[in-house]
Length: 251
Ligand SMILES: NC(=O)c1ccc[n+]([C@@H]2O[C@H](COP(=O)([O-])OP(=O)(O)OC[C@H]3O[C@@H](n4cnc5c(N)ncnc54)[C@H](OP(=O)(O)O)[C@@H]3O)[C@@H](O)[C@H]2O)c1
Image (cartoon, rainbow, N blue to C red; front, side):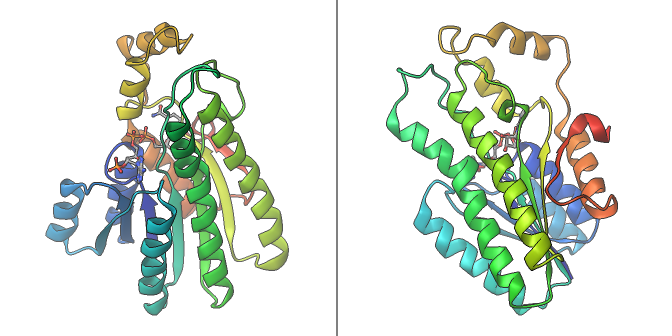
């Protein structure tokens, strides 16, 4: 059986990816602080394999405990292939440097960068002991390549995620070419994250008006459209390890 672990499957892009993978008969392990009841009943009605693990990815101990459990469960079932979607993300803090508070800065880097690093490390390590192929998909952002005033922490975390992806891909090509790791930049989607962005203040975020206009002018992508394009790439598109894909290349 093929397994997918999806962080942040409770809503937004993660939910769309999870639903599509279930439709493809792939066993889904969802990880977030809250559970998506629709996904659960969808899987139950269709008799599909779905499990939810509650975990705060900003807490190192929870990450360690929950993911060792998940890895144990999956590897015990001799998986054919494992997809690790490092999708959970946070935009906050939205403030200019000098006005940042310590706790949200640390939380942002933990969720957006440290958790994906630790999870990829764990699954590549376990895969090295078996013949299972692991594909890690890191959800990044255009903000990794463009400094956006007010988003210094988010931009830095996503830039770090891109570099981690490229470096790990080089290592795996040599050590375990079965494994792949890519990054994917989903474009501006109509999710809760955009609501958070629109509710920030102009003093903290210079481009606020532009983001409000994107919503008013119906320019935001649907999470389902983006999720489908990504799943098509991962399942059928032979993704190139180390590459940072963007949604514009796929739709
Ligand atoms: N929306 C956009 O326009 C946009 C653009 C570029 C890139 N992205 C990236 O796309 C990915 C998905 O974003 P989205 O728009 O779908 O976001 P979203 O709707 O805000 O959903 C975020 C997801 O992350 C989870 N999450 C947040 N903090 C967490 C924590 N501490 N522990 C565990 N899970 C946590 C949330 O689950 P719980 O709250 O249940 O824990 C939720 O499922 C993110 O990596 C984001 O950076 C989004």
